[in-house]
Image (tube, rainbow, N blue to C red):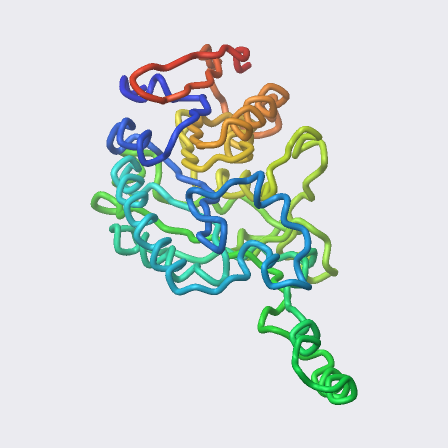
Length: 346
């Protein structure tokens, strides 16, 4: 194991990715799998999860628009500039041939992917996470009509004329996941032999024993979709009753991506925006090493608690050495580091 990375391996670090990533060694990470801030309204890299979670009156008063409904060209520009810097660091730390998967939103996916592309990565594919359960955000204009200085009869007629016509937000039923790759060193075979990364494992199956695809779902939708794209449905136990994170990603999707792209028992999976820890939990279950980073103390504590309850899945055909390191809560503020022992990973 690389000396510089020892203090990070199998740990969740409380800190800013822009400050922590430069401390990770060049060419030392096998896979980056993350769900970054999307830079939609109120949800940039400085967003406050407590304030966002208290916004509930979504569709009646303009001042209470939910996160993501305010349209502003600066959102995309800011996302691009910030993620370009992050992606340059991720490019540096990934091994040649290493993969980079990033969840995104349909609206600003193009900005995110452009930043990653410009940082030097090859954009290999776009995975689609398909689902049906989502809150429609389109708004009726009745509230605005009521405020017009018109007579009641005319306003009623206008409401009837525009019945069903709402602001342009169609119900969103998918989430794009970028698949990028750091260019290989020489050929795919030579790169694989040297770095144990760069190819995808097509022994991994999806749906009813189907070849892996770039469409996944974790809920049953019908015979054909289930046959080709269904992954195991996430459970409440998987998320954790104590988990207050607003956008927990399904463990099954993270496991699917990790199984597809990591080969070595020494593979390190990095998540620079680990949130409540799903990427780290999936990596641990599959016998992989992980590094998680997040700026939110509450989420870091949730991630550590989830990791305490996870045992490596013995049905996975990977042989992994026992890991003696203890999970540590690292608080990187100023020049000191405080440690909190959790328990040894088995």
